[in-house]
Image 1: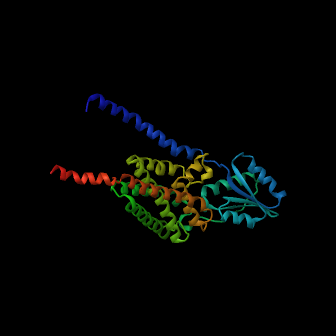
Image 2: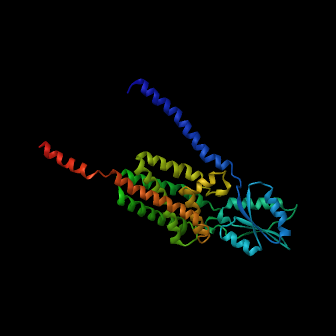
Image 3: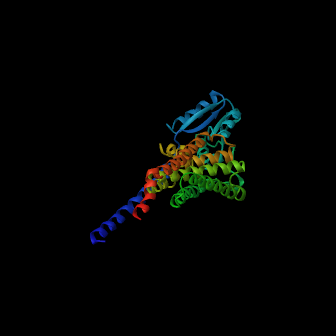
Length: 330
């Protein structure tokens, strides 16, 4: 290799590495540094005369909260359990109290507690009821957030291995499905049976985790089938680089800057984190959108794997020509 060519490569490395690092810091650090409510769903319950001041307090931060009104505490509690709202303020003759759900996001529950307490009159205490608490095995709710990156890496690794081993068509699809199912079982055994950090139906949780991994692995393998090995890089960018930092699993999608929270929920890591949270702590409530998103990724990814295999298959005439060539030479 000539000296000028070697010099160009040296300059490219020196320039591209800092650019990549700066981009990575922006993707991961910017959402974390700008965490604040963006149309965060909250509820208020009680007579209109008693809740008017509460609603006014939430409205002081324009665009921060999406207020839902409920007739009484029972209706507000049901909305929290159904994942319609993250928490609710209940006004009663005895005073104001707050309903939260730390299982929906400890950071959000803490934020709501601070926001409601700040609105209270000096010296007043606001009783807080945790309607859906985090499990005893993970009181801080950190296991789910810590699990998204390993699951993303498992999905990308599976898609990459299937591609690099040359598996095509139905064989590739069956391998992706089988590997994702086994990852779901293994991850549930660790997070559920051992750590007791997720407490829903065991097989439903395994299915949710498996579907999340399948959406990522099928997406990566599908991109590779259509674009070649560059598709694996694009898959890694979407699933690991953007998907994790935009997922909102450690806080909430509504706590990320717009439109980062929405983008995150359209990618498998964010949709998978929301689905796992729903089936692990809320009996599947609020899982519909996440389930649809993951299913679309699976269908499109596996379809691309099958279509890519057919596209690479040589035409019958070409096969016959190559088969006849040795005889002509002889």
